[in-house]
Each structure stands twice: as structure tokens, then as C-alpha cells.
Length: 134
Image 1 (spheres, one colour):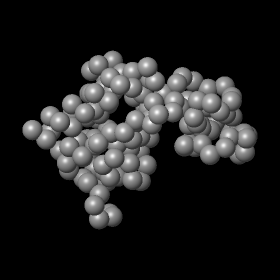
Image 2 (spheres, rainbow, N blue to C red; image 1 turned 90 degrees about the horizontal axis):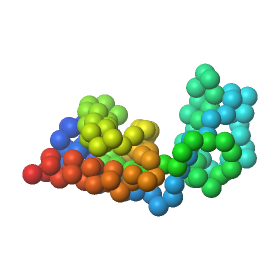
Image 3 (spheres, rainbow, N blue to C red; image 1 turned 120 degrees about the horizontal axis):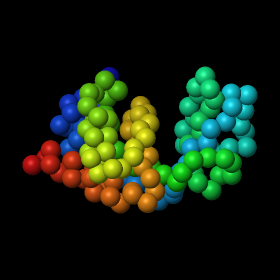
């Protein structure tokens, strides 16, 4: 584990410091044979599954995709072996009826919430963090 990565749930929640990207994103699904999709310039994420390839791209990229989502990045550098961050965040958002798709990367967790609920999501996340710090 790299120095500075947080494993303790309370510390992860306290240090979330969520930041909302100003651009909307969407999810594009392509069949496996289109996995190269070189027409997609600089996707945020590429996820390869047996059924096809998912690209997470800014909403202005053309193609058939779903939704407009806000990308909220949790600034805490949570350990990949940390337990409970995703569950706590998802539960907090679910309590308010806010859908959340999580992509956990090496350094940060990225939450994709409906674009029109991004401000509410930020409030929920900030409250979760504030409650732990009290």
C-alpha cells in the first residue's frame, strides 16, 4: 500500500472532500467488436465486459448513450482495501433517492449521479463527511 492511502472508514468519510466536475458525462455501450472505438477521443473510463465495452465520456461526444451524469470525485486517497466507503456513500445517496454509479480508481473514487441531482448529491456527501468529523 502506498503511503498516505486511507483505510479507516471514519477517516475516509471525513476526508472525502467531494468535487463536482462542471461537465456532464454519459455512458456509451458498444459491442465487443467496436472495443477500439478510436473515434472516441480521450474517454474518462473504458470498461470491457463480455457483452461489450462501456465508455464514460463527456456528454458532447456523439453516439448512442444513456443519461447525463455529474462526475463527483472524492478527493480522499482511499485504499483499495478500505472497507465501507462505497457502501456509506451509496446508502447516503439512496436514502435521498439519488442514483449513484461508482468507478473506483487507484487514487480516487468517482461517483456518477444524475446531472439534475448533482447539487443535492454534493450536500449529502458533505453532510456525511461533516457528521463524521463532529
